[in-house]
Length: 105
Image (cartoon, rainbow, N blue to C red; front, side, top):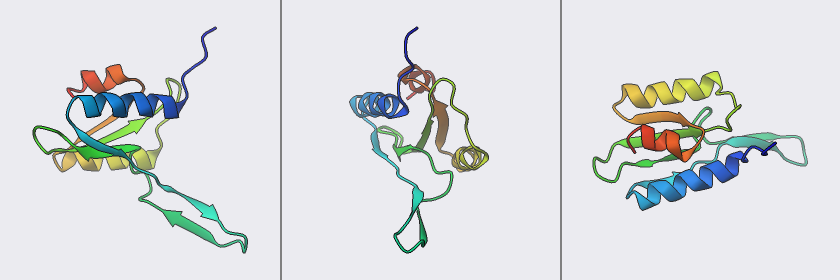
């Protein structure tokens, strides 16, 4: 059995492809942590995509939620992608570089 690629590996491959294709993208971090005193701190926008940026030719906003082949998209992630699309941007879920190519990027 061939092991599934890690999400980080898929993200790296997608970002490399997008850069070579002339798009301006970066890894978007969001999440939270608890400090030693038990205080919780949130950073980033809940549900925001793993990769965001601008289309190299049109300037359209790009949002890509990266998942492993069996990974599930959360409701917050779906809402974020739908908002991006409603505003005229490109919002997709990608499980491989092929998904990004099929989306026209």
